[in-house]
Figure 1 (tube, rainbow, N blue to C red):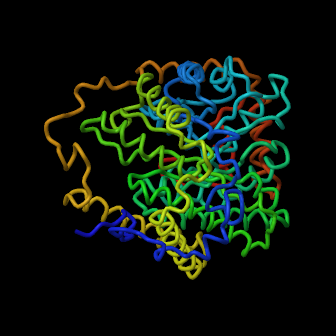
Figure 2: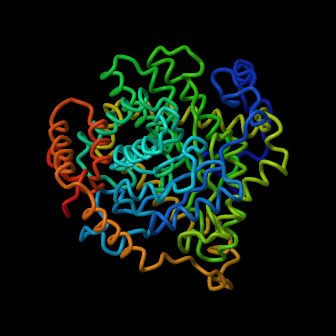
Figure 3: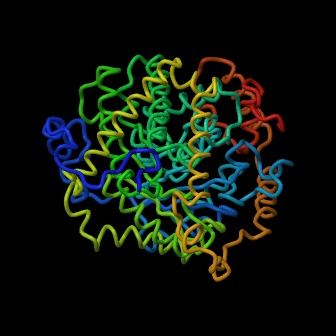
Length: 524
């Protein structure tokens, strides 16, 4: 019987020292040393555990705030905000195309008043906030800055991340609003502004997670993510002449799939590849600027609606792979996410999974506990070679922008997705409870969470109430100024912050930008 990882690497019956490059291992030395395959820090998790950041958001701002407090009360150490599709795509909750989608897959945000409710009772100076938002990233970032100022806080103390990775939207996810060129300009405006004005904040989290969820192999997840990251660095360098300030505020986001050994090796390989890539391409020698910092999330695509309690086991093993791979931040999926937004109890179990890993298993007590494993080191080497080959292939296409435009990257993802699904359907890849030991159990014993139908009406009414109470002329002036700046080379973020503070809605700000940028979606 042949054994392979999902990315096609052969798994040998047994590994020995002959399967690994002893010279390479000696060069890598200890954790905290270039090229960081063994981890970014000498102490590993001894000095600081990973951030336990549970992805959360649904319904109204008030409902999500309640769930935030629930998770914080049970030990969550960082917030991660999920937005509904209208918010992600630049639509207010009362837009005709928003009907039926408001608050459904994330929280609805119409403007600053929703942010005030979202973070009610939460000290922005003591918590880091991650926002999974791309096309409208500058609007949500502006809301956070305005909220901090209204609370008397200096925005320079804000900690967290905004995803702001628009390129992967065109490649793998599809929640874009404007055409690629102006979208890339807006993303870079946010990066340039944030590194100066909110220096503790990460203004981009280059996401391989969604690329992997679309069906990419582990190799393409890394290669395409790094390709996108290089575009952002090149654009930033063309603007300011140096990438050093952005490198210190650049983070990544990867998925954790089912194959335990391959996923651990993937994370170790990722750090090594990135360190070499940045040093070679940009001549950077400062070790800290060669760090690859990443958030990991267990892969939702691996969860099944059949026998949903099995998902808790899958998630725990994926989470362990992320920790053994050296993640700085982690979200663990809930067992019921193949059915709906997670219930409180399911999300608490997912959080407890991380806490048990951190406090009971001992795997956080030593840095890089799998280092030196023949199998892990051999797979790490295999992934490094394959990702470098893929990056060279991308380079021959003219870089990642061209690889997206000409369909090369998208076709590669579609092909690997097809082959993976066929392997599941043929039984070559077993999924317990689905195509193996399946058929007797379903999800009927799980009570799925449902967003209240009234949530959409409440968001629409709150928006209407806000519009009646604001100073209309001030909003009009702010939006006109925003459109004017969009037509120039001036950075739009300060003007967007002004529009948010004036009371403009997310949809109105997007419309003002679209007057110059245009809409990418035909329905607008």
